Image 1 (tube, rainbow, N blue to C red):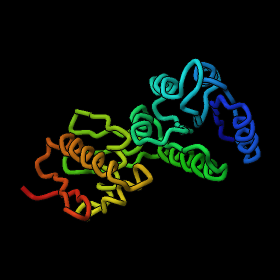
Image 2 (cartoon, rainbow, N blue to C red; image 1 turned 90 degrees about the vertical axis):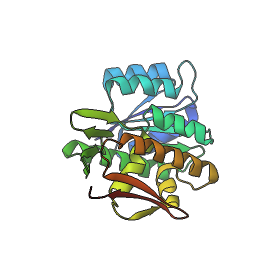
Image 3 (cartoon, rainbow, N blue to C red; image 1 turned 30 degrees about the horizontal axis):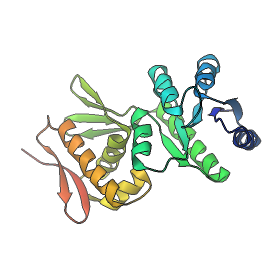
Image 4 (cartoon, one colour; image 1 turned 90 degrees about the horizontal axis):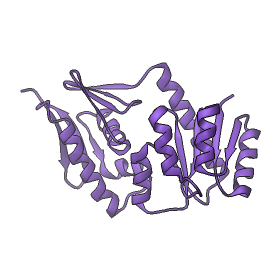
Length: 227
């Protein structure tokens, strides 16, 4: 039985979600603010944390930072009424694995929880790794290794690199990348995508055989060339 920590200050919503999840066979711990949520996580642990962003005493972002310091691998799903890409991006940069905008369907929440638990369990059995030239990219830990040097990529960088590395030598449509990362394709995301591609090029710069090519009007391709 997987244990879920639900941190939500809306009492009625928390009750409905907790009852639904228990009906699905999960053990559910609840907390009404970030301080209580952090205390329960430290005391009881959890296989996944589902947390609101805007809460009294300690918000979800602050709580997530504290959790990530001691438990970098526990899945973290944010529930948020905020809809701007900046807020979503901030959550992912802190270490969130997924987010769901309010109002949401309980069925969708359950699907996302199951996917995160399944992914985390698979990661513990054997991490997915890609050999990219002289680099090794560990998808589960978001670590990009070059010899004895390691760089921890952001959530967005990891999502993009995972798609590119799984399709070396093939063009990955820009829209596909944006939907995989942000769940939508719009102008602001296109600008953000270009910025993250630039960061990945810098991260991979120590191996001159590696290139991320902009296929103008289509997308991006990760290539390895003979030198």
